[in-house]
Length: 320
Image (cartoon, rainbow, N blue to C red; front, side):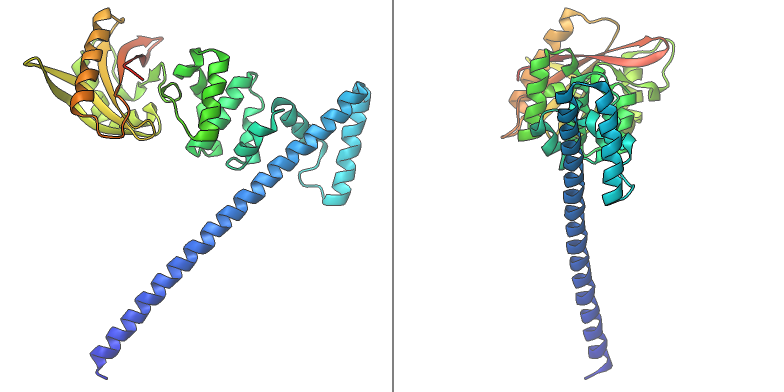
């Protein structure tokens, strides 16, 4: 066997071993991730069951003093049997609050498979039931970290979403569809307003200047739009009845499976903006829509300033 042959065999064996190692490493990492998720889910549900059981005990006795005594006693006994970590009186009360704020196990169980106990603790201080359900559902759907969840709460995401203005029952229905069937509605995608301080625009400027700034800061603009948006075109040319029209910005949303048309306007909304957007949407449906996609969706973005903050107010048009 020549030296070149030996070298080739050695390199081939090394490549094969390296490939095997990375395959095995992936198996180990995937398994560890699934085990961690399973453990986390079981812990969260254990906390829910503990809180729910104590709440029932306290409620049945209907005595505030008994409630204080039972929590202190249970905490002490659990710590004696299972150690100090996680079973102090403060954490027991968190479990009780957790079960009280989320009494429906059918909602908690699927969320617990995707979120940590810390995620639930972050939303517990929120006063509104729909807000808590919204943030946890979106966190599970978008795979938010604890830090991202807190950031979205601090940024008042729920209040800015299109769905916030809908009836409570419709909000619950759309959140349930997202949790159980992974169906994302447009109302859970679009916001009003969008905050665009990153453009740095002040004073008087044109729609063209705004468009230039948004394209120059495209990455930040997409982050503000939300997860799932992909940039398609700027000044999309459309020939309608022999006349040229240009759509300011065209995006595609992966989970909605549809084109998103954005027309930038300064000042207040005018009725003609709606008709113009519907014209664009009909053209996109006829000329750009691919098989399997839903009909295009339009946003007329009204750009203004309030208290020195640059923002976009959206008006949604188009067929669903």
